[in-house]
Length: 452
Image: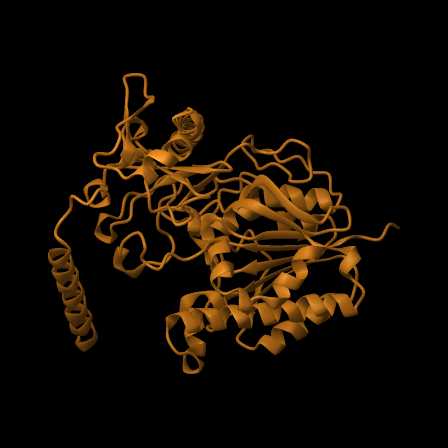
């Protein structure tokens, strides 16, 4: 009988490329692993919340939760990856490091996962992993929650300041990752095992607004969804891969690398990263298609489409366009410089009293040569088609269908923040006073809640 290849998936909770760039000293083991792996530099996570990401990863499509009310059980448009592996004879395990191991983990995904084994002892996690890899034919998922800010608080006594806390949590996660990889090396299993390391999403420390303190689950700006993806497999060349990749591609990629022949039944499933045909765009969202804007948290249901240079994001406020290579934090909505003509094309508005720097860069950054206009039209068409499919999916499965996004939102520019961008907003002192008053009001309400 042919020797079965193994699978290990290592989940970097709340880690984006921005996280790794902010704390490079915290990731020595990940850095050591990179030269031996295929590093997908243009991987975009399909969602900004863990449960949605995992549903999309395991079932290989990003429609799984759109027809339910709010966050709901996955629809199982495709069989779960680990269910498929179980039927193929693999021993499957889902291991979790959590500050709250007694809490039931991922109840909505119970039918998509093996039973979750959880601990708050990193040594116990590694021992469990060691036991699970004693025989050939294993498929193991490892989710380390220490880098989730609420779980990182378990390390608070050892940290000075928030950045030290997050950086320390990253170092702990990387140390555990190193222990797992080292164990595979000592057992001589590296060449017989497909190893996938990925980040589910990053965190936005309020650079796009307070949003009542939310760090993720907010609009899918690039710094949240541009995440690490590394795959080590004997059949894959090492080095950087700049082709676009999405969360929904991972299930089929794993099956192909394990040489398990499966055709996914859902028509809008992901594409294997092993094949020659690679996607030209990748999509992300923060809410399910059936959810509504959370106006109270200043968080809008938003859908984004990415290519190698630009991110186009659409919400009920309209469209925003960012060059994520020049502006990885997505702070400059390029559409502030444009209007839409009758045909939906971009018309450059110019900028009054602009310095020569702006004129110098305009032809490339803003596309006097047509690049931005061309990319905008292509991305908008792709987003319109994807949203149309989501809408049809919702209507076919929901008695009282909701609207994923009003199509009119793709025909207007989001002007939110434009005056402030051009320096025509409130005076700085007035803005500071308003912000301080909001903070005071928040603290008073928090104090009242605690006293009650």
